[in-house]
Image 1 (tube, rainbow, N blue to C red):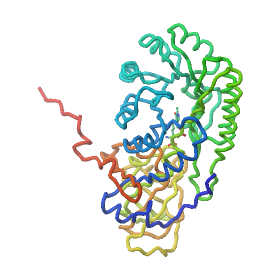
Image 2 (image 1 turned 135 degrees about the horizontal axis):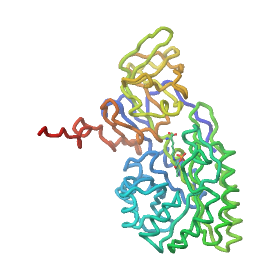
Image 3 (image 1 turned 135 degrees about the vertical axis):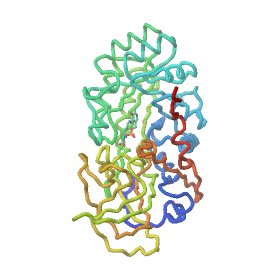
Image 4 (image 1 turned 90 degrees about the vertical axis):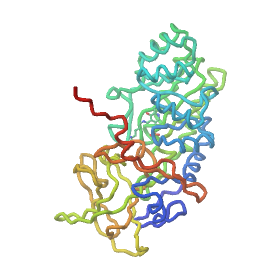
Length: 424
Ligand code: LLP
């Protein structure tokens, strides 16, 4: 298990390169990813037969390409994510399937794509089985099951239980297996994902549920997927989860199934956050320092259009200051960090419900940079054009070299596709 992290409040470098130079070269706001961190986190999961990266966490082509070269396969949730995987060099055919489409519905484009290209489908609703079976009888599928319970770092990321729209309800497994049979679809695996940012207690309960479900499905099952959900320590000094213990639990479940079925059962894990969260840094520039009564605000040029996790979930991200004058010995003060958007909720230091929280950070001035840390997962990929601001640039640092992997959107790109109707 890695040692608990220690997040700095002053930083000068990211992955060995000066932040000032990165900001100067690429402008702000800019996401910077450290390839070495992604490789390290992938290596942590090497005991599993198959690491299937959840593309939604950070879907930049260069990140997908990196993970492909390092041996990870991918889970996708839309036709566009499938096309990203194809563009990053993933094949369609293979064992395990290099690309899986997991969803609760097919829209027209995704159904056409998975049927046409033969992308493996992981069905999360009985209707998906019907719709796929009618067009692609005889193929292999897997089923995503909602085991009747779930957990997440927020109620909004809990994907199990009857409050969740996700997965095939566990009590309907039998009828879904019959449905598959009707179309000659072969159900070769089961998948359970109960939520994102789970605690280990809940994650561990999936094993029992999976064992029960797999026994019900019988020996046609050749793979089981734990889903994702593995948390990372966003707080200073917080412990990493015990992945060895988690693997052991799953490994014994899998071995019991292998014994019963008399053939190997592949064990897949499907992380998003664990692989990429810690690799990412959002660099912003402080553009105003304001006193509002009791509160001191650092206002930066990145907003919730760039990083929405605090406004959506009250999520906590470590924050550091990068002094532009190189003076790192600065007194600290309690501050609130906000962005440029015309909306009060554009605050990076907030609790769930929108309550502004203060953060102890070094004194800073206009022209200093501010880095939002652990920003590799569900940050750039959840970016928007709110207030007509561009999607931020993204940079990948590998072996001391910084490469632009997404340029900042231009105004023309923001309005591309919009037209003013001709008046008659
Ligand atoms: N597999 C499936 C089917 C999923 O729906 C997800 C995440 C994952 C795997 C990966 O979960 P992870 O290992 O990253 O926890 N926007 C939220 C997270 C939403 C996750 C949605 N599904 C956040 O910023 O925390």
